[in-house]
Length: 145
Image (tube, rainbow, N blue to C red):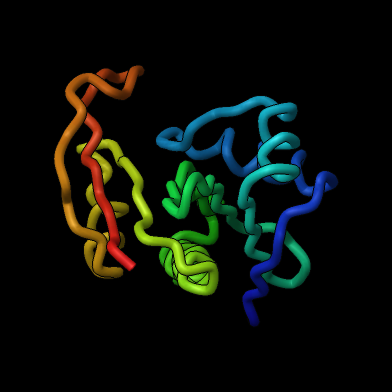
């Protein structure tokens, strides 16, 4: 089934939040926070058969991009959706001559860390006790463009 990646619209927020709530490692934001990010940042959604199955959020400041959230619906995991979402962010960052894309990830999220490394993100450091529930360090990654 073909995958479509597009910019999120305000009417996607309920589906975005529904996916996010089923992903324990995702950042959990309010509808208002997503609405603001759609208006001022980068929010892309992935759809299969017109059903939202994943999303990615990012911010751009002074030519540097930060991926803030990559979430795929549990039933859609291991189908290349996160790879496609991140790839689209990389493509868009290249298109505007961004200098770097940064992100942080829970130390225990080995699947995400493996994906980022496969996509050529380099580990740049850690932030001790960055995450809560449970408390654990963040691993910092960056991709120079």
